[in-house]
Image (cartoon, rainbow, N blue to C red; front, top):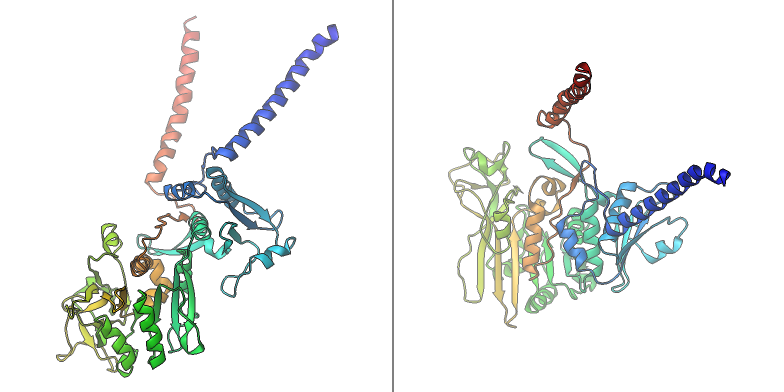
Amino acid sequence: MKNLRRRFPTLLLALSLCLMVVLCLAMDSLELTYGLRQDLSFNELTTTSATTNDILAEIHTPVHIYALYQKGDEYEPLIEVLKRYQATNPLVTYEVADITLNPNLVNRFKGDAENPLTQDSLVAYCPATDRYKIIRAAHLISQSYSVTLGTYIMELNYEKAITEAIVYVTRDEIPEIAVLQGHAELDENVTGYLTDFLSSNNYHVSFVDLKNGDALGDAGLLFILSAQKDLSASDVTVILSFLNRGGSLFITCDVIDPIQKMPNFLSLFRLYGFVPLEGATISAADESHTYYDNFPYIILPAIEDTAPTRAMLSGGEDTLMLLWARAFETPGQTDKNLKAQTVLYSSYNAYLSDITRDDYAQQESDPTGPFSMAVLSERLMESTELSRAFIIGSSTILTSGDQYAMTDSGTFILRMVQHLVGQEGISLAIEQKPAVRPGLSASSQTLGMILIVLAPLLVFIAALIVLVPRRHR
């Protein structure tokens, strides 16, 4: 009994330690299961937005995410993000896998030249749709231009990329977009930013060459990007059949395109009231707010209030750039089955300059604005189907990475595509997270200064509380 009394404190301590370990493990399990762990990172990397939470709440079919890392090389912040997704909706699960040890994953999830399956990638897979999406490491980081700082900044796209992939693999149908080839249009090598952007927003993009027997199939939208050669008679037949089924067009017509030498394309344009003008649109020198920096040939067009641009205007997303842009005749009411409207327009003092001149200084014979820089139309076809078409006078708004980083071109393209295919789509308004901790500023030092003053003051007060009573004993 005496030995038991001596050992009792030790046993009590051991039992307490065991209970504490069990309690810690239980709390850790609860944190992971219910997403209770607090995100104290400076950029709130693992905190999911309301958009993601709403989307996850609507997921009713299993989605499995493979994080392809070698053992020991896992990127913990990304794994923490995946844990938060799994905690929010248990149907969204993840596992860390090494493709060198799991070669079946390479055979199962085949990438392509533009998006290969590699180590350090993620794969989102939905068994119900048998659809998957590869998220490469490059997709998790983006670069944008900060007007305030006057420089490019790196941002993390973890949440945006993963949520978009989940939406993509769980959707019943993926809208099809075709990009016309065979007429010296912009090809896959030039349109990488555009196709990546559309794919990330849950569109399936394919390149079709009608001369090679490719079909438009289930595509609802056809991109015609700055063609240099005319349509053949058979091409016209196929495209008109597509339009009579309710298909839509997204057209770019650069100032260097020989459109006046392509009568079949001109006939297609006229079907929607599009009349291209000759010459590059130049802003007047005294209207500095209508062009970028000191380059009057880089137009900052005004955005008209239309169905696809209304949300942009209300949200202040109104910055676009058009480089060496072609203008179009301002549309009028040509027939009862056609409705056309200006979407982007130049300033009143802009003028058209012949691109073959030695300089673009304004001459008396130059036509003056305002000009329509982009036009949106809808036509009731003979089949009684409604077909929409959009034309813009500069292709760089679609193809330039700087445009996506510095302007609202991405939002503009997405809104226009959604309107053309007659689909609202899911707007993934997910903010990117800063990759680098911001530097200290005068305001950010305020709390530190308060603590520096408060700490010794608290010690002094504590000393007074202790010493004053002793002095009066």
